[in-house]
Image (cartoon, rainbow, N blue to C red):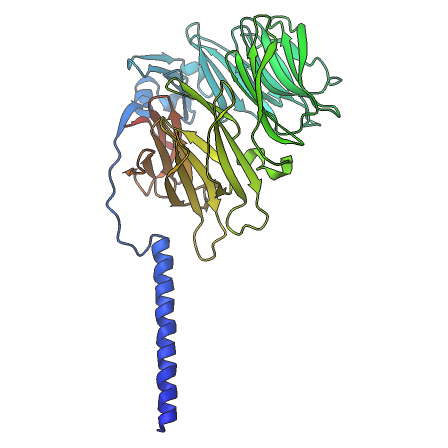
Length: 498
């Protein structure tokens, strides 16, 4: 063999080895990034405490074989009261502070919930349960636990808006035009009282409704060419209009209203940019402007922002007597390969509109806010554009006082075709972010303070679901396990996350 040929073969072999080494390195990178080839990190166990074993307690009270109704349980928490409704006609009302529990058993009501509730409320020993009944229909159930009465009505295009001292207020949507709707007031027997506006000749898109000192207040956009923002006061008993006032003219889409007692903050958009106006209710129920400020340095249009379904809007947070407003701003990034939007948060003093801080810009595909005691956790959404990698779900934690980054976490996420839901379900409490993994049947708690994690592992082979039940102090969740073959309920337990 000539020296030239030997040199050529040696050089070729070195190149082949280099390519093989590069391929092996890339494969290891992919496996490590997806969590398949890394040494498993030690998992800190998460402590959870059972509060109510619904399945076990129900079995003591009702024989499901006699009712011939498939068991289903629904829980929610309101003002530190855990309310659990069983489709067997059993109701558990638990005071989470004292642990005291009242149980109501009405087996003759078995099967009264035909569909999954989309809204539940508890007031004065009464339960208001709204369920999607059929297409565009809502089944409204009012249950008096003390007097053992149950009232029901079914309506088209209605969603619960507000429960006041005088009336229950629903928003009634137009089936033909989404640009306006109505407020329908019901009494506590679910009887019609009045509707505002009284007809579609006065098109109004209602943004919020509430009662304050025996007056019903409505803020809405009059849908004409000028899109005028109105404040209307009504007699809650009769629906008679007391007065109306114009708050803003030439209002564009994107108006958001935050109401807290007698204070109201309205985020709006015009040709100059994004701004907030603060109002305060006077003794005569008129709104008096406190301040107004712009928070962008360039003109914006509504097309610059995430769609309403992709982001949270203006929020009021009372952090142990230190209130603040959080306003997210997101801009459409047309040329981004991994994320759709560039965003920032502005933290605002609700008393005078001054800025506490503005965060650094960050990339996201959607934007959800989870305020804790000392931090703000941001759900940045899912990045699905990296070739060869599973979708990533990112979270960013900022310091509440400064807006500086504290930590960033990434989880694998995907759409689970067999259950038609995403792999991860997210919630938070006053100190942490909570992540339920439907594929692994695990619950992970991430401390906002330092990003440390703890995990509780349920049976991986089971068909499990959770419903988070957050409160001001702790997070609870209802754990549901069903049979994989016929979806029969096997157990349902409410836990407290320690």
